[in-house]
Amino acid sequence: MTSNQEVVVASPVTPHPPPKDRKLWRDLTAYWILGLCNNYGYVVMLSAAHDIIAQFQDSEVDDNTTENTDEDTRKCHLVSTGAILLADILPSLCVKIVIPFLPFWVNFKILLAVLLSASGFLLVGFATAEWMALLGVVITSASSGIGEPTFLSYSSHFHKNVVSTWSSGTGGAGVIGSLSYASLRALGVSPRDTMLIMLFFPALEAFSFWIILRKPLIMPLHTSALESTEELVTDEKPLRGFKEKLVYIKTLFPYMLPLALVYFFEYFINQGLFELVYFENSTLSQAAQYRWFNVDYQIGVFISRSSVNLYKIKKIWLMAVFQFVNVAYFLTEAIYFYTPTIWITLVVVLWEGLLGGGAYVNTFYRMSKEITPGRRRFAMAMVTQSDAYGIALAGFLAIPLHNAICSLPPAYRKVVW
Image 1: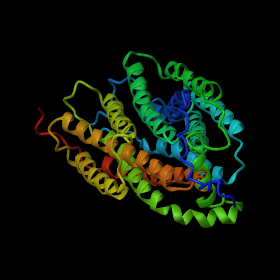
Image 2: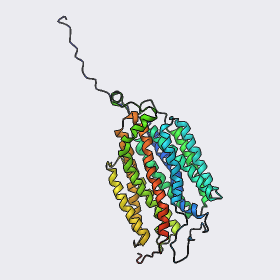
Image 3: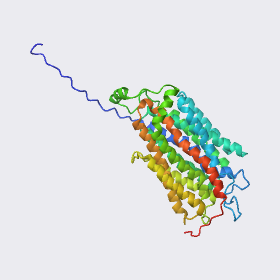
Image 4: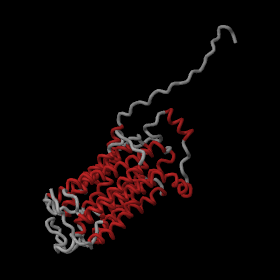
């Protein structure tokens, strides 16, 4: 080495921050709309459960007509709305169990989901027998069951915040679905015409997926060059084959069990007890009270599902405990009618919705942060089953509970504010 030669010391390269993605709004907006449309039909069927049952029984569909005018018996339907819940969740659960193990044909799955959603609205709207209405509910459920795991799995190719906008959209489905149904019925629109109006949402779902949402890159859009290199080193290999995926499921139990419990308690209330809580001196009929309880609940869900970027919760099991307390309140209220005013019950219903929505969004947001990209797609699809397990069990138990409470002597409120 000569004296005039310089020794060049390599310095660490400081990575440049990734360029700002100016079209990210398209993905975030699309996922909000997809969450809305995917859950909209499911919410509407639950909101319409009271009417779907009533129109095929001896009572009139008129809101001013009660199901039983005998003063010695409670005002109950012969069939619990838990039957609608089972028709609305079991097909979805069956689909969610199978979907993670199938090839990821995203375009085919979404097309099928859109067609099934539209068919479900048409069947319920034009039903001339109870089995046709239930079949429509089943088909709508299958559509939601295809869409949720597919969209959440697909989210692994986009910015992590699409999970939060998806969750917010599903919460929005609760509010818009229950409120639109309750409002249209209050305006005198028939159940059939209401269902036909709602065909707008399957069309919106298709437009959002194929037009608004951008085609993903090979790597997630939020990943910088440096992050890509690190993930290639630290990321676990993608899961291959049925056996390997089956073994991996046990690592997802910390996400699945608390979420399943929250939804079990939540839907045990919604479909087993809501319709049995009735305030006689209210200006609203029993059917209208049921619908507005659903609207109130969905407002709580929407607020909490939209809150993850403001407030994050890790202890999902704590929400399950609080939801169990809500079960105790609604069970005793349905039996003894001790709450003096409907406004107190509406506050508890709102709280119930906040717990359910918070458990959902925080579970999937944690997964988007804690599970490595190579396994996130399968994990997201699997954990969507957990709330369905809880909801299905709640539906089974809601039916005998409904019958047991209906067999009790009638209760009357001694104090009404």
